[in-house]
Amino acid sequence: MNRRFSLLVVLLLLLLQAGFVEAQISYKPTGFVNDFAGVIDPDSARMMEQIAQAIEEKTGAQVAVVTVDSIAPYATIEDFSVDLAQSWGIGRKGKDDGVLIVLAMKERKVRIEVGYGLEGAIPDSVAGRILDEQILPALRQQKWGTGLLQGMIGVGTRIAQEHGIDPRELMIPASQISSRSSRTQEGIDLGPLIFILIFLFIGGGRFFWPLLFLGAFHPRRGRFGGGFGSGGFGGGGFGGGSFGGFGGGSFGGGGSSRGF
Amino acid sequence: MDKRKTNLLIGLAILILVFGGYGIFSVSVKNDLVRLDESVSAAWSEIDNQLKRRADLIPNLVATVKGYASHEEEVLTRIADARSRLAGARTVEEKAEGYNELQSALSRLLVVVENYPALKANENFTRLMDELAGTENRIAVARKRYNDYVREFNTRIRTFPGSLFAGSMGFSPRPYFEIDSASREAPQVKF
Image (tube, rainbow over all chains, first blue to last red; front, side, top):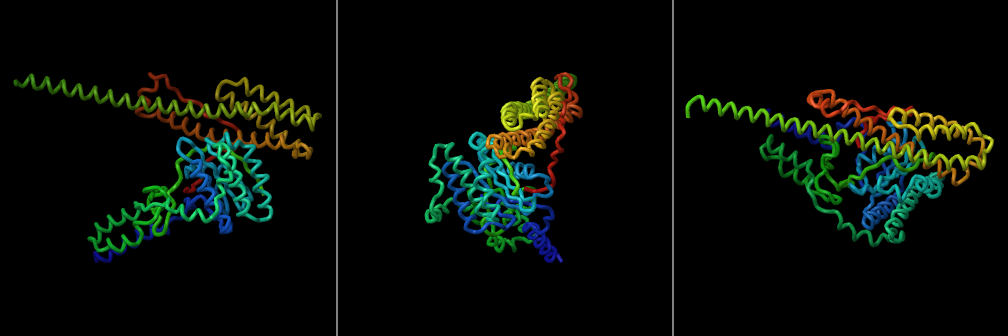
């Protein structure tokens, strides 16, 4: 009886960890490029990740891209973007050098959200120009990945100029990128670790080893911990590499939007 | 030691503990109130800066529009007037009113501009409209944050234990920034 009960508890906790019980909308960052709507082609996605990494390494600024099917339940893309950017904390804390590009498919809106620290490099009118000249033309041809990539290049160029760096340094060839994967570190994900402790309590050690192999140790993108995401069990990142998160930058609503 | 002396010492110790405890307690509560008050003020500065920035964009906008739509006197005058009103506003309520007036004057302008495609295509105009939209968005964000702080502050000074000290510290409820734009509530989305 006791054994079956503890088995049930294990299963339940595993399910919770995996997020099956989550009913509400949940957006968690998976990297610089977050294609929740599934519209970005792999080549563009890869290039954007590379460029974003280069931007971060050379300037410290963090540029993220998000696509969503719909911004619902938010009413405007402005509200959605600033809340998302602020919540994820894109950009470095204190420096607030984050930029978020959002593409909302259903509402047909695109926005460049600029953090406090970059409002000098990318004022609203410049954000508008990047949208008009670099992003919109591709979007009108339904080339979502290309448009966003052009947008990131536009943003990256302005940031590089602000730091006195030649923007071309951001466009590194792919061959050099693979060697940079040493950035990911081995780290301990706290979520599964807590479960292990619980199981030790319940099962008397019998479940320890299988769980250890399941995913307590896996590569993370730079940051320690952060396994809880927002609230409770949802953010454990069970199995597979997970993104360490952004730097805690702040946003004030700067940027520009367009419909397409 | 005789019993009286012990009792006296105990009594003294209790008094010290009570007063000391109250001292620590009151300092902590007072500090919280001060911190909140400062947060409200800082959040207000953010709104104020954006209001000023918005007003500063207006003359350029008026000049650009005049170049294409010189006959639209009424709209342009309304905007200029609204801008002056906003510049002269001092209190939170006055600034909110000034903002609302400017808003309605600007939305009139947007309607009028539809009749002048050349103006809409003008690069300077596009830039100005982006900047104006930017200040509008920033005011909306700043307003939500300001009002959140005000709510927290007002609640704290009216409930225990803040209410004990609010009066002596000169703290009274601060005004919300009430403008006409739709209230920006954060829906239930987990980021």
